[in-house]
Amino acid sequence: MAGDGRGVDEPVAEETRIEREGWIVRLTPLGPGPSGWRDLAVTGGWEYPERHGGAVLYVRDLDRGAYWTAG
Image 1 (cartoon, rainbow, N blue to C red):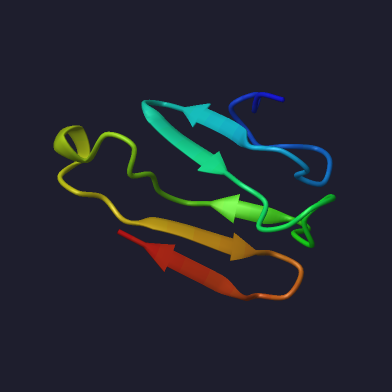
Image 2 (image 1 turned 45 degrees about the horizontal axis):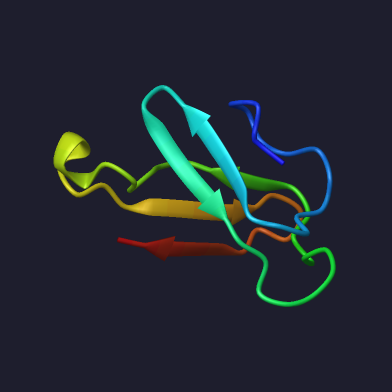
């Protein structure tokens, strides 16, 4: 399954790659079956740190307001 540049429309059951404006983000489920993620917003990227100065990835669950960072 590949991302369409905006996100994914169904639960993530396999690795998913989202590309947009030079950013590439991979979402990988932590266990078997669809993940518990619902409406996520990815607001950064880190696939090309040399291009973006070591950018930080922020992932936000829009339903619950929880967020995670990496980078």
